[in-house]
Amino acid sequence: MVRLTHLIFIVCIITLGCTSRKVEEPAPQAKPAEVQTKVAEGGGVQPPTLQESRPEAVSAAPTTPSAPKNKLPEIVTIRLTPRLVYPGTKVKAEPEARDEDGDTVSYYYEWKRNDDVLSGEMLDEIGTDGFKKGDFITVSVTPYDGKEKGKPRRSLPLVVANRPPEITSSAPSELSKGIYIYEVKAADPDGDKLSFSIEGAPSGMTIDSVTGTVRWDGPQPGTYNIKIEVSDGDAKAFQGFELSFTR
Image 1 (cartoon, rainbow, N blue to C red):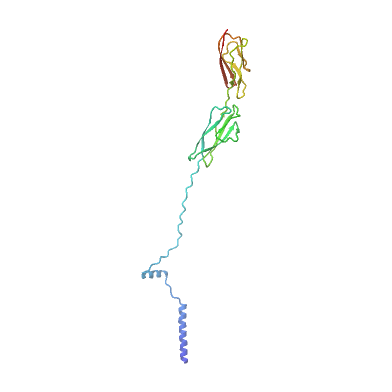
Image 2 (image 1 turned 90 degrees about the vertical axis):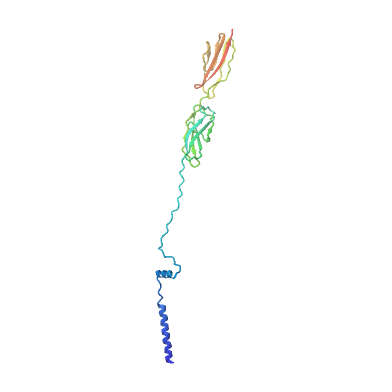
């Protein structure tokens, strides 16, 4: 019995030794290259070959072409109408513009009387009530293409013209006690001082240059064409009539 016990103990030691050796010695592993070769030889599906990791090329984002720069509109000409302007006449601006982009052009207006800006006058037309002869009118026009304003341009001056005087009386055709008397009446819309004269006056006929009184003492029988002239210094008005006298 003693020998059997020793024998069992020896077997156990041998068994434990074998088990311990298997744990301590791990099974050798095949190298990756060898594994790939065996798989290929066995007819299996070959796994993808390991490749070196490389950064992928980053494609540049497409660039959007920039919009062409807007070209400013330009005033070519400015025409003021009518050319002959009296106080009270309406004056209209007729600008012409050019825009290289083909944009529709609108306008801003700044009117001046002499050197004074006419506030509130922003349209293409103004009235000239209250203006005087000799005043000059200008307008500055700024073009606008819907995006930007161009450079303003100033028109040539338009001068308010003098208005001629007007004879408002009618000449008598009769003598008074053998004398011809005619009080010429005239008015000037600009308030200018008037002077009177007779063009080609017959012998003995006179006219007062300040009052306009015509006097003719004892005219001889006959037919006479009379032409009265009144002047404001710049413009003139005329009145013609015929006188006939008999004995």
